[in-house]
Length: 173
Image (tube, rainbow, N blue to C red):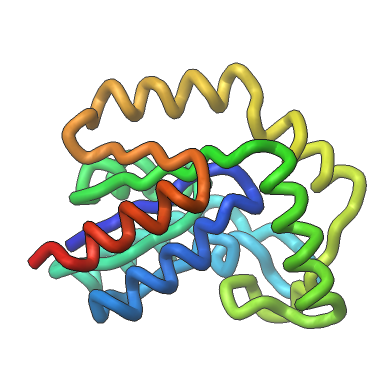
């Protein structure tokens, strides 16, 4: 089983990916851990793509990958995925979850983040959560993806939907 988890920042992509990976015994790749180098420096696009491609090649039987990064073998990930799970929670919920995450991991690095990237919340990230990460361009890409892969695209808009989906999904053989 190959699962791509995409969606808004703060919607719970990494938590969902980690849970599915544990329950289904699948390797999990968090794209934030690929993108961010220590001190919040960005990795070069070519190197990111090589890392993700190597992960895909090394795990032909199945994987879970969370993140939206389009330069990291995006088309291949979406084409190969058996399920594309998109988390589109409200701005308020995403901001609340990011602030909660910051309170828990302040001055520490989350397990799904690149080493040396202590949790932070700044004005640019808040703007991304509330506005920029929901731009018309991003919305159009998600619609196009849903139209391209309607049979495997799952849109979840709140935690109750995630919980229900997860229960049904984990019961599947």
